[in-house]
Image (cartoon, rainbow, N blue to C red; front, top):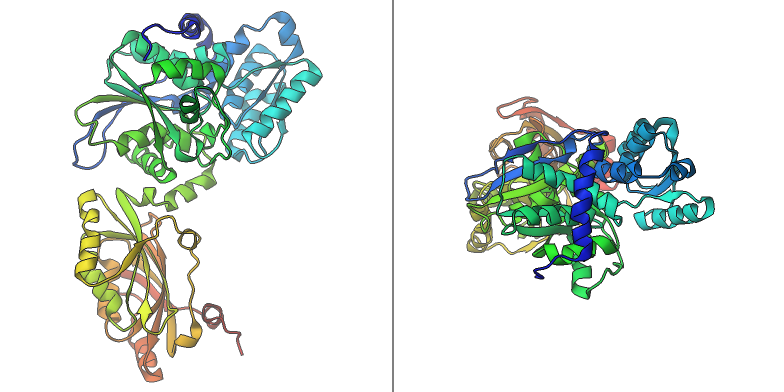
Length: 519
């Protein structure tokens, strides 16, 4: 790593000092809080810079307000134009209204509604929203054309020294907070504006501190730039972490980051989802996906960081309410450590419960998908979680010892979309039950053990943990004779120990599940 900072880095330090005087006309400093990681495993002491508590629920106001504060009188009359996936747009809107400057903001058509509404509320009549293309890059192209056509001033989201300097004020607050020094900081990267400014400032005051960039596996534009020696465009960009979904790192941030960052870590969407859950459970912080990337990297390297003091930035909380449902369904949000397996068992009464008894002890079933498609073999899919990673790691050994073949299907498309096949012609005397059971350890197993074991063959199962106190499952059972089926339906209580409600589905639903038309 070079010992002398580049000219861009030196100028950036100077501009961060100037930005101190400007940005606090628009917002206030944000707090730093201690994050206690869940579980008993060794780990680092983690401190979180809560940029999600800022005026626009992200750090982006700092750069936009700093840049627009220095516009000349003539430039203010011309107005500004920008492109944003949402957070930078809110910063521009905030500055536009307070400074009395007209702003036209190009956003992808896919921008979450929560960000669209926030821009309108912050900017009022001073802001015009234009929806351009389906990606941030297409919005940038449209905004640049707008700039050329109307002579407005383009306010870049990250590749601008004054924008970067404004974002760097969050690092100044960290240094002045009294919580440092830290051994390491994990800084998420989109275009690189925040990571470059923060690493520049922290490295100036704490030169022994390790500074690590964090990117999504499917959007690692800075990692690609550092490998190529210059910013390069990615062919595709994953947009789960929409706030950092940038195809090409900024030229100015790259110039700084190549000297300040020790390395780049990448995280998966599932790891980010786990981090969002940890932030919620420990701090009651609802982070947007990009805002939790630093925490995701810390969790990923928890053991290696044990005993160290680590800093992360929760960079934003502008998450669409509907996306919370998707996050809650991911492997990472299943709680602790999780994996999804397809297990082969014999297709006979009692075999499913035998699997639960012998192999899944101590594990939490968060998702259970199965439909009978073969007369001899069953291949149910389970998503299993455990607070203790070591317990989950022994699962393959337990399956092998019991003679069960299995395969990892964590990323399988049919599992993700819950495509549960069922061959109705293989069933003799089926019944389908809607079961509402109390979501506690052992409740579902006890229901199956007391009322189903050896009496019927489990031929269909559709259950996913929702986080409620009540778990809901759709279960299919097949009986050897019509009398056995009738006897079961007569004897089963609607309510019982461990469950709140158990009722057969209506004839129309039963027919649809079996792929048959009603007579």
